[in-house]
Image 1 (cartoon, one colour):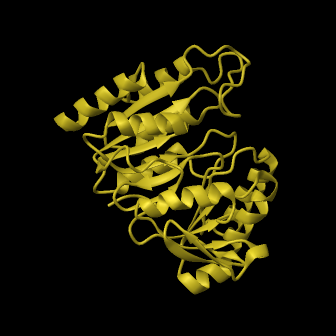
Image 2 (cartoon, rainbow, N blue to C red):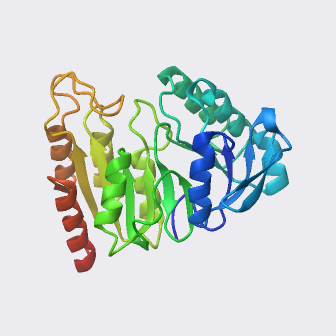
Length: 296
């Protein structure tokens, strides 16, 4: 199995006809994803050929869903239009929206999240400013390279896109059920905790790798959740041990203020919850390999 994305996922791309949408839709199709159309109100009704596949561009998400049965949207819309694109997808009732766009104002993301909650959380948001989600051998929604690993029994959730790719490559000999890049903005739709519980409930995930980074308290909250709710082994890594105080590192949410949000504090919280934390990505992968080979 997998979480959130599988062979039954039918994907539309909001922003399909833009440069990024076209480029990554081509790669998603090559990975076996079932892309069934695109959305662009200004190009509604047009046919575009992407990766050898003829796709229809629809005027709205609701129309695309009605015509194709789509249940996933991947958003490659520019930042100033992203909020409206995601709100449209939520109003249409699509099950999953993967927001790749970076540079979306925090206020806009807050509006998206609040609207999803107000409509009963029928739509799961992954992102924004994330690489997306892949269930190797089944489907790929976003910009994660599909050729660096294969299907297996490790679940991966990560704030960092680059570290998502590295961990997938480091553990390619074992493989993954699903890999999720949740993004590192101050407000995101799907959290470490959401993914941890989903992997806990997935019978085909035997071990979870969780990658965090400096800033905020998401990893500390995840540690509390692991202690109380997760029985599967969890291996962790926290990026930013050498980050200077007060300087944003990589992501908008990756900033240390005083003793809050440091990598050491997060490591301590995770280890207290029974999580083995690696000092480097490679060491983290070795911990994961040993744990899955020995059953925990």
